[in-house]
Length: 262
Image (cartoon, rainbow, N blue to C red; front, side, top):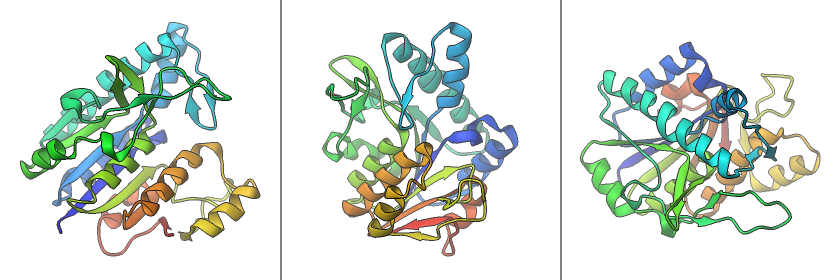
C-alpha cells in the first residue's frame, strides 16, 4: 500500500515568514502523495480585531457566529489558502486549494447546541469524506490544500483543522498507508509548557488520561491530542505531533516529536 502523508500546519508557523518558508520548501520536497491542512486562527483573530469582530474561544475552539463565519471564510478559504497554494506552485508542487465544499470533498453537520453553542461549526465523520475524488486527485499528482472549512445545507461551516486532518487520515486509510503529522511551533507535546525540552516522546491513551487529569496540557494542544487518538482508534497506524522545522525528518524513517500510540 502506498504511503500518504497528511500534514496539518498551524500555530505560530503560519505567522512566521522564515518558519513558513522552510516548512513549505520541505513539504514541496516530499515525493510521496501528500495533503496539507491549515488553520489560520491567529490571523483571523488579528483581522477580526481590525474589523471589530471579537474572537471567543472555548478549550481552543472558536465560537462562530454569523460575523465570525464571514471572517473565517474570507481568511481561511481566501487569504491563507491561496497564499499557500501560490507559494507551493512556485516550489514546483502542484497544489489545489480547497474547502470541504469544493467537489463536495467534506460533508459536515452543524454541531448541535449543548452546554456551549458553537454556532456555525461543522462536525465531520469519515463517511462524509469524498475519498474517491481525493484518491483520483492524488493519483494525478495533485496536492490538495485544505482550508479548515466544510459545508452543510448550503452554508459554509468553520471546522477544526486538526479534526479535518484526523478524519481525512481515517477515511483515506483504506487506500493508503497514512502517516498523520500535526506540525506546529513546538518540538512536540510538552510535559511542562515552560520547558521546550520536556517533550513526551511517546504517549498512549492511559498516560494521556493520567496527564489530562493532572492538567498538564495547555488548551491549544487538546484538539490535536483528541484527534490524534481518534485517528489511532480508527486504524491510522502513525500519528506524530512535532515541530514544523523537523518535517523532513518526520517524513522519513527516524522521527522526532511525540509519537501517539494506543
